[in-house]
Image (cartoon, rainbow, N blue to C red; front, side):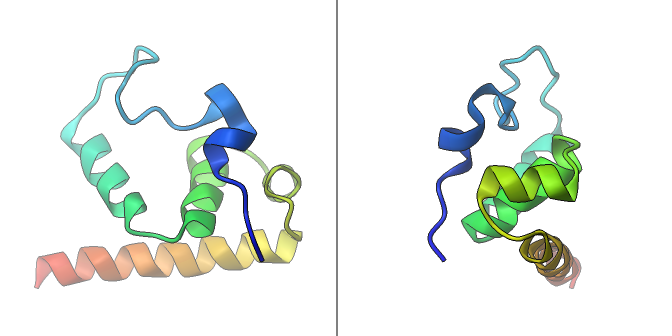
Amino acid sequence: MPTTPLEDLAGDRVADPEGLCGFEVTEAHIIVNALLARLSSLKRDTISLVYLQGMTISQAAKLLGVPEGTVKSQLSYGMQELGSFINTKDE
């Protein structure tokens, strides 16, 4: 299913990895953004909207134009993938 880049859909609601909205960029922010960049765009956008932007599953589904079940599965698969990146780095 084709998706639209999050930046095109959410405008200024997109996570601000450069800290331009007045938030301090810490090493943790840099690491999280580097890990998120390794995900597919749908997984990354879904995680960003729900976990970083605080949207509900329903809101994220509407914004992304996908069913709520897709949002839930992308959250689950995306978090598993992030975990595997972290576990691989620790080895």
